[in-house]
Image 1 (cartoon, rainbow, N blue to C red):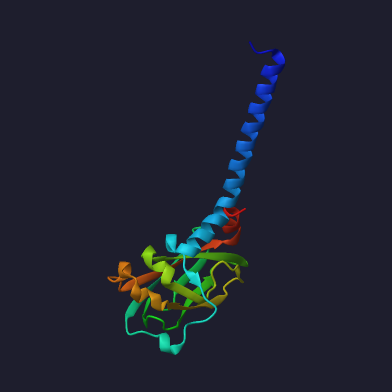
Image 2: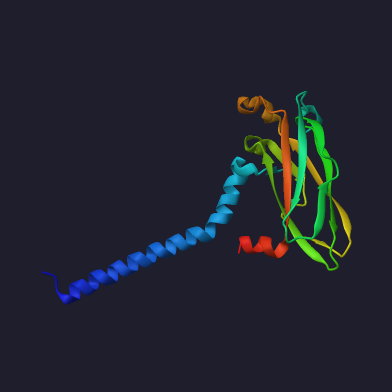
Length: 188
């Protein structure tokens, strides 16, 4: 038979264990976005690309060609015109390419936006390396301002060694611009 003091001790212990579990779950929720972003960047899952300091040497350019298509979207709350300047480019694996997206603020006030991106098919994202990009950097456009935003990229030469992507002849680089406040709320 348990005494009142023993029951109180059991309830206190249960309370602390429950609070510990709740705290751990809350910390996992807080850490999930950055951890998921790191995981995606390391694996290419979800179409996350790699970032490179520079393109490979000229002797690393291979004969295999891939057509890269470009897509642009804006969140409904962002009054911008946003489109790729060219819809596609054919590149050799290992060759650096430079393309541009055009953005125009169609409102009568300054607006700050930020872009997210992905590459499809997802299994190719690991090999897509961006040397220069406007993504994840806040872009402020004045009323009526028009800018060209550069993206410099290459497809890693290891791409040709992966038999899981042998059939791939096209990739799509897709950007979506959000109002900066909406984007930041996702990660606060």
